[in-house]
Image (cartoon, rainbow, N blue to C red; front, top):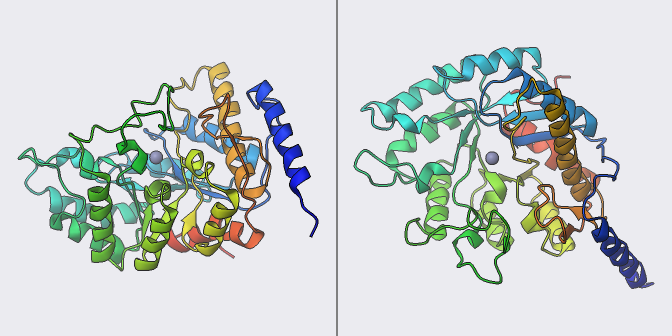
Length: 366
Ligand SMILES: [Zn+2]
């Protein structure tokens, strides 16, 4: 077999050449020809202008559906979200949240279960759990509420009963618990301190993963999607073992390309092929983040940035280019990702079929 080493070197040369230009603003946007569902996107308030901007961005890169993770509760934002969803029923999915700010109320644990069927009737298609659970939510006594606290069991069970998948973010990449050293991935970046936990004040990474896995174990009939590769990007072996052990577990890939991009692209591809029924496409980040919707210039600039953000994801998964800027432009001056070029049948599952299987009402009606 002819060695492709010279070709690879040429590719590296080209990619180093592009380092000189540092940014990829001149690069044409990558538009996908697949149906794509983004299962991880934020929008803090039920904002029509934000959704309008988001849908325009999605059109530029060919993305079909966006799952918004900030639906709130039925006596909160859900009705406003459903008004927006009515206008774009095929393109928006909204997940609700547990109102942990009400934990001091005596009926809290019953109330959150009682609200689920109401939410479902209104049009909610799943639940999102933020990483506060296990790390920051405190009981009235001042103790941290554990993710696998038995008082939450009726809630997880009810989600299964009502066929509402739970997109759960627990823990974070293991590296956030490592001491800050020369090996710190976010070394010297503005976010270095944000991506780091004080191990004295925070439960250990292992403890949070144990809590999450205990929920999976106790509720085999409930479908869970672990946000951000289930906080296991630093150990895909362990993620594979978690998939093998818990058939109800899936993950989204959002906000983890900066970590996946440090691995051998062939290893990432093999992993995505092996677990092709378990990984879903997601990007994270917020629609029209802090932008005044009345400021046309700022809105247009946001749309350009957001389209580029989507484009980098699609290019990473669909091509084997060596010079892809990390979607968030982490290390934009020096870091380039090698695309993993997933096979078409795997892309079909990763981009939409897995989401359609897990999220009720998402499949295209034939
Ligand atoms: Zn998120």
